[in-house]
Each structure stands twice: as C-alpha cells, then as structure tokens.
Length: 429
Ligand SMILES: *Cc1c(COP(=O)(O)O)cnc(C)c1O
Image (cartoon, rainbow, N blue to C red; front, side, top):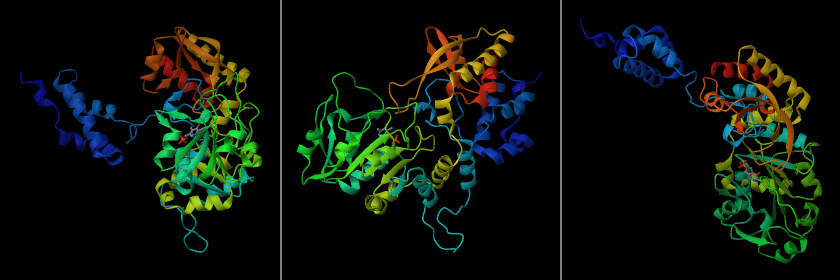
C-alpha cells in the first residue's frame, strides 16, 4: 500500500476546485490559500482523509475578507468601547453601503460643479441643534479638541479646571493631547472645587480659550463645586465645552448628562462631542457653535488631516435624520419588555435542557457617558463556563460574569438578535 499522504490534492488543483475558485474571486487568493494549507496540513498529520481536503478548505473559509467579526453585546454596557461603541442603525448602515462606491460626496449633481464636502451631514446637525450657527465634522472628539488647540491656542493658554483633566481611556489624556498641539494649560481650582473666580483670575492676554470638559467616565461626590457653563461664558474669551457623549438635546433618563444644545444656549461658543457614544452614530467628532470660529477650524491647514471620509458622513447624516438608533432604543427599553424577552429566551433554552434562568440586573451607559447612571434590566443567567464558550463560538456573544454566573443582559442585545443569542447558547451544549 502506498502512503495515503501522497494522495493529498495539490494546491493548484484545489485552487481550480469550483467552490474554492469562486471564493478566491470573492475573498482574495491569499485568504483561500490559507484555508487550503490548513486543510492540507490536517491531512498530512492524518487528522483528515485526502478526499476530504477540499471540503475542509471550503469549511475553513471565513465569511468575509476582513477578520473583524460581529459580536452580540450582552454585557449590559450600552456603549461598549471594546465592542466598537455605538452600533449603527439600519438606516446608517444602508447609507454606508450606498456611499461605498463612487458617490456625489463633493459633486453638485445639479450644476456639475464641485460641491461642499459634508454639507448634508452638517445641515442635518444644524437641524438637530438650531442653537448652533455652524457645524463641522472631524475624525473623532479627540481630533475636534486637537483642532481647537491648533487653530486657537498654539503658544497660548487654555484655562481648565483641575477637576476636569480627564483620561479618556487606553492611557490617553485630554491635557496631554492639548499640550501636544503646542498649547499651554493653565490649570485652575482644585480636584473637587473650582469657582468662576478661579477662571476669572487666570484669564488674561495669554488666554486662547476657556475649556470645560465633561467628566464623562467618573463622578466626584461630596464637597464639590463647578461653575455653570453660563458662569464661564461671561469671561471675555471664547468658551469651548467638550460635552463628551454626543447627546444633542437633554434626555429625561440622563438628567445630569450635558447636551450640545443646552451648552450653546448657556453661552458656549463651541461645543465638541463624539458621534459614536450616545448619539448612536459612526465615530466622528462634532464641532458646533459660532460661525466665525467654526470657519477658522474648517479652513485651518490641519483640518485636512482630521477630516472624515464619505462613509462617516453618510452614516452620520442617516443617524441624524433616520429613526431612533439602537443605542437610544437600548437606553429607553422598558424593563417589562426586557423581562418578556429574557423569559422567552430562557423558555427556549430550558426546553432544550439548558440550565438557564432570568435574573434582575443593572445596565450602564458606559463608553464615556452618564457615569453613575444604572438602568434596571433583566439577564439570562447561565453557568459561568458559558462565558468563554459563547465568546469563542461561531457567532460570538460577549456577556459578563457576576457571582459565578454568566449573565446575558438583554438590554444591550438587539431584539432581532434574540434568536441568534438562543442558538449561540445551544451551540455551546
Ligand atoms: C470620549 C470622550 C472624548 C474622546 O472622544 P473620542 O470621540 O473617543 O475621540 C473626549 N472628551 C470626553 C469628555 C469624552 O467623554
């Protein structure tokens, strides 16, 4: 008898196998070669019969040419940084697909002349926040702050409270960001208390602007005090307010979360915010405020380095004009409805012999928004070992481990993912 390994089909032959040839056209040759080599290696080690190599290579093909995979967010953290923050609405996703080819992002189809890039997204922003005279969109909120520093404060001072020197995450700090642009920080007040007088004493001919930063990922309680935005608006220098979360108008469930419209009404000259936190849109930095300041930002040479691409502009406009985002729906979901969904999932799982139960729990906003807010929710509780199994499954689900249980908080799961969630749990056996 000959060595069965001699019968392992060669790479060229496999590349001509119809299913693998089709996949090479769709996913690229390198991705298919990877799957072929994995299957050939398995056959060489004896784990696979030579006749099964083609099927195994097909089975090993990834669904997409990119490796980023959808993950069901069952963490109970509505805006989860590690899961890509806000999930796009269907309207925004469709807009991204439509804009992904050649598109009229800088073409006026009526006249055939060059059109202003981002005009539709900015118009949608101004409709949502009529308190702003003008708006501009950049890569993210950090870029919005950087551009403010570059345009107004190189070699000059930004006056900021010691209670608002915020580390945003992954070791990045707003004060370092501003200094990296060549601005000097003039810190005033203390960690827990800062007054209008502290700011007034520091403002002088070196001042570029006063900066108010929302402490969006921590709370300081006790003997605390911060001036209102209105209090800082009368100091004779521009006031820039970083509201953080991208809430454009007040939300009744988040009474302490600052919003862009409110800050402008109180007298802020510029507001900066993120597009992919509570606004529920794509990663973007929103700049709203006085026309003259916005125009200086828009025309600054560095603006080009922080501009957003057409996909972001399309998604942002659709987020602003379209129906309620998944983020807002998760925030506003009523606990009775969450209980109904969790109960239905648990019934399905128990019907198939899985040890599952509903438990009350609490969700949070997360992702740099509304620190301290806890929303009543309901979770599907499973034995703890499910946490790792679900994360590494074919349709990954990220839950959280609490008191020896794997909890799947349904508030952050899209209602149309409930069946997928049940199937993923059942697949863990
Ligand atoms: C999140 C956050 C930022 C950074 O925003 P990105 O969009 O992630 O760049 C800046 N300031 C505040 C107050 C934030 O909450």
